[in-house]
Every structure is written in C-alpha cells, then in structure tokens.
Length: 134
Ligand SMILES: [Zn+2]
Ligand SMILES: [Zn+2]
Image (tube, rainbow, N blue to C red; front, top):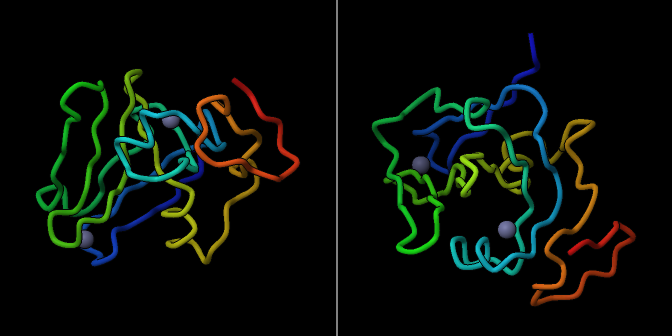
C-alpha cells in the first residue's frame, strides 16, 4: 500500500488525497503555469491523474478550464483555494506550498524539488544550487 498524504483548502470544505510519490517534483517556469495560476513559477508535485482524488467536498469544487490551454484548475467554491491543477497530459499537480501548508510546513522525503525546468521561459532568476533545465 502506497503512502497517502492529504491536503485541504483554506476553509476546510474540500480535502484531496495523494497516493504514492509524485512523478515530478520541482519548480516549473513555463508560461502555462504562470497564466493559469498567476504565479512567477509553480512549485509542483505532479502526479498521475488517478493518484490524486477528492476525498471530501467534491460538490464544493469548481473546475475552470483555461480557454485555450489544455489545463484546468480545481478550486473550492467557498474559499477559492486551488486544490490542484491539471496539465495537457492529464496529470494532477498539487503545489508544494499547498502541501506544506497542510503538513506542518514539511515535504516528505522524495518530494523535495530536484530541479528547475522550462527555466529558459522564466520571468525571475533563481539563485539556488538546483539544476536548471530547458
Ligand atoms: Zn475551501
Ligand atoms: Zn509549468
């Protein structure tokens, strides 16, 4: 049985459970994430679609599909907090910030960021020692 981790929105109505380890854990600097989420870069825990499930409050979620990108964000209709977003590959992506907020400000071993990717599309320079790709 794979390990499970839970995150919830700010108001607590919606809970999401992640099973197993994310496929990708790092910082994404692509313009898709930037436009979908209005962040300079996205701290991703990207999981296969079936590894992230809404385990409480599904009726309290709203899914917004971006008008021209094959991406959605799923958020709580009460507090507006984004639980996860999806990408063109159908992965579900939980932000590391969301994860930390709900898990004593910690990421489990194996979840820490290992690289920056789409770094060539960045809008902000990062001075850490992680590898910078793309
Ligand atoms: Zn909420
Ligand atoms: Zn991205």
